[in-house]
Length: 368
Image: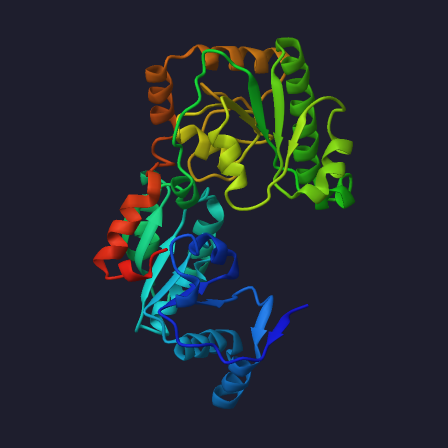
């Protein structure tokens, strides 16, 4: 049920488009300078709804609601990190008095392309537009250039750059392995129902983690479990995964998972943005995806096996990958990462490229 807000939005320099971008963007922008437009309508502003109905009735209510919200805030910058819905790129045609910035730092699958093609199938629709788009890797540049009129820059993952690696752990003497979980505890209600994809992911993760547990027990390594959700779900994870002596490490805030990765010698994951982010930092990783590497419907197609991933799985396969990856020199490992994912995920510690461009458009006084 939507939360109703009865205060008129204040005029601010920045309008954050999509509430999910809020916590991320507050890492660089000051909260006092920002207003948030909740495009998923989990919260609705009564003042803007009333204003919209007075001015135009219920015709095209959603777009007029957005327009009146933007006009009321009167921002210099409209910014988002939302990456698959093209609605952000339609705003410049309804309100041109702002600079539009989209920081896309996660995996880009085919959904965005499909949505854009669907939009352009109507020949009357205008070109999608922005002022600046920041992409995770150069592979996507031509794709976005064909879909959106904008200046395009390669950034990498904003969060991965922000929570950068200060000191790499030595690899020659392994003491522990970090496993990155992708399971959502809410799936327990639908484990063997209609959601076949979810069931496959659940079963795949349970198999991989139990196998990894046996390997770590054999090698006398500590096994750490990086959960995607908070401490209240520990019982769920422990009841669904192998029983034994492994460390449950919940997500407590934006930085917690990155701290775990940055302090790990070796990481095992199924398909995870956090796993790819670890790889571009030079951390040793191996991936065992349930469908395709790095994720299903990814825009770039990879073979089912590679130097640090395998879509088939067994104890022997996992052991061979881990032992091989440990033995690479730093130079060999860096070259492997660059060759295989260097075009889909860049790495820019401290987001220097982004901040440099924001300074050029006179935003330095708004930084945290």
